[in-house]
Length: 153
Image (tube, rainbow, N blue to C red; front, side, top):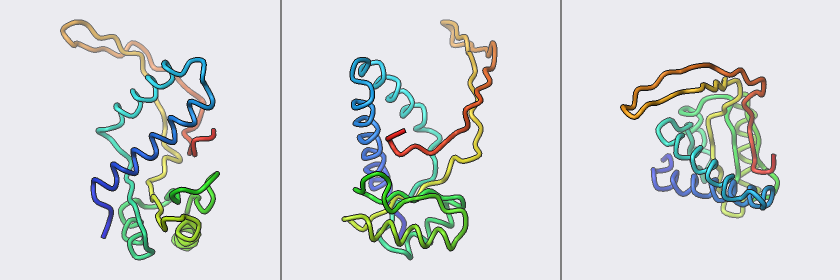
């Protein structure tokens, strides 16, 4: 059985707490502004979330893979520095990384996520008036590829 909505929300909360802790360590002098930006990013993403599932067993992980697809990101719970996790590009790698993650996690738990590798990021400048009319006035080309962050980047 795949993780239910409450488990996914708990996993999201854990991810947010880890991001917040990393932000505090990296940027203590501008913490309020940085946290506001982080909260905005989380809130904007609520309607269009990546696929993610929690698994405690290989059979459940296999079901999650059918929903997430490849490449898939596997993140074991409560490990340091990404130990036991990785990006799987094929089924053999997926099963190896999931087993490594389950073995490394003290709670025998992994988070399996849809990868954002290859996604494009578009930044637009939008002007909005009081009547909520919006217009895109320009697009901005960023040369930075979307990446995978473990909280220490």
